[in-house]
Length: 242
View 1 (tube, rainbow, N blue to C red):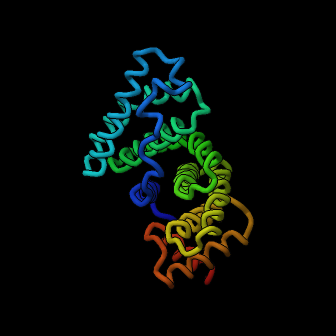
View 2 (view 1 turned 120 degrees about the horizontal axis):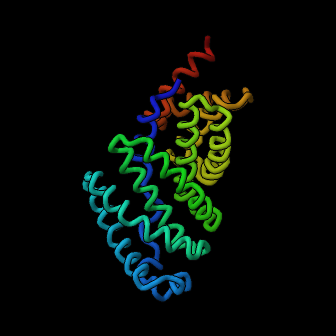
View 3 (view 1 turned 90 degrees about the vertical axis):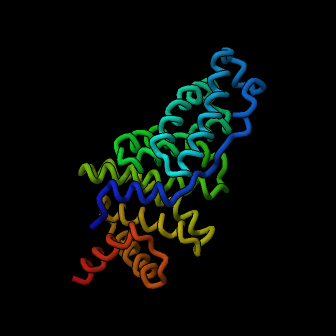
């Protein structure tokens, strides 16, 4: 009913851009309250992490995913340290969330799905904080919803439907909010459809499958469906017809 997990993961990451690139605090950590507890060496490392992140973005945009991974992996320890020093600094949390997401995207493009999923698992709590702090930021909300769908897909591919369902349900709530704000947006609709497709396979509510098929058919008809969602809708439609 669905595409292979690797194909779905790669398609999502290629389609979804970063919600942000650089936090304001990253360029002046020594003046931030969180940085007052850091050693000079840690501050230097954080400054270098900003440089590494920028280089990783440049490499990734040029298609050099291996180079991007090397830069992101080099940057992550120092950024984690700063966030651990003051988890309440949302700019630094956003920075860490974005680096983890960018690293996952590069890893997935290299076919390293397990690494990408591990990064998603680490990133999700940080993205939840970002979405909670910035409820009007649809881009961050959509990144989190997309990651949750992929975490659910990974559980489902391992035949763990009970483990997958909470991810899909959380993604559904986020995607419904985005669609309520902008129902014409193709990304919003496809995120909702992806979450519905997943939830239809993990829950017992027939209304979810009906909603997925109805929405999917409408999106096939108007050409707004993403190729990654179409095979599932085709299969579900045929199943329903049968």
